[in-house]
Amino acid sequence: MMDGPDQKPETVIRVRDLVTRFGTHTVHEGLDLDVRRGEIIGVVGGSGTGKSVLLRAIVGLLTPQEGRIEVLGQDVGRTTEDEYRRLRRRWGVMFQDGALFSSLTVQGNVEAPMREQTGLSPELRRTLADIKVRMVGLPDSAHAKYPAELSGGMRKRAGFARAIALDPEIVFLDEPTAGLDPIGAAAFDTLIRQLQAALGLTVFLVTHDLDSLHAICDRIAVLAERRVLAVGTMSEMLDIDHPWVREYFHGPRARAVAPSGQAKD
Ligand SMILES: Nc1ncnc2c1ncn2[C@@H]1O[C@H](COP(=O)(O)OP(=O)(O)OP(=O)(O)O)[C@@H](O)[C@H]1O
Image (cartoon, helix red, strand yellow):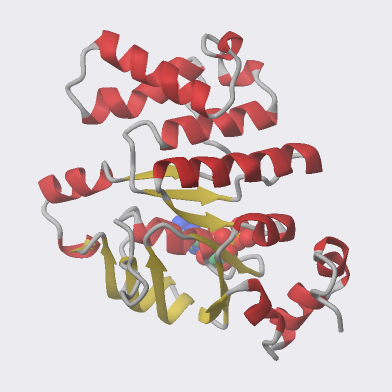
């Protein structure tokens, strides 16, 4: 749904006062975050600041100690099994390594969520999976291949195809360009942007990749000090006076990728 000029953007993910702990190790403490429908939000932060843990908590794979997480208007921690199953069909997740089933072909991997979560016939599953595999730009020759036979970039595309298998409204991508060469990473960024626009997706993108932040993110959320320290556009990030944020957005790597006029000290 489009927002009119005076309408507030619809919040599709709302996290409030989140606390997650592993034993005595507190990862998040009082974390708040809103994600708007149709945006690509980049989630950044130092290693171990809890980006992946946040993603897993939002999709209900991890139960937080405290706080409330709403996705598409539903409290993820309070759904019945049936409600959760229905909610889960409205998002797709691509975990860090693509996380494909090694014993299934690309086609089989993309069909897996359909097999698990829908009553579609094998023929229909095959046809739909075929379309998804093409949508992510994989050649026809890749359909019957196993993950081990693919390049890293192709595996990521296959993971993306699986994430959009059920036509989700939200896609969670955990470091999708990690391990890709710069050309492959840029191509993957373009793919994310194109599919986001074509399918009206909301994209929750965990990344370390400054190029991706510049190229495709509408807003950026910075995780530090166990919470979302700041959220805003790239130009807003450049004005934040916090040691990690400054180092990240103004450091040598940032200067190398920033369009001219940005990230200057
Ligand atoms: N299942 C678990 N059991 C115990 N500790 C965990 C578990 N999962 C994550 N952690 C810890 O939580 C912290 C946050 O982990 P997380 O993977 O979310 O970090 P991250 O910000 O995604 O880091 P990176 O950028 O390195 O991927 C880390 O200290 C990690 O060791």
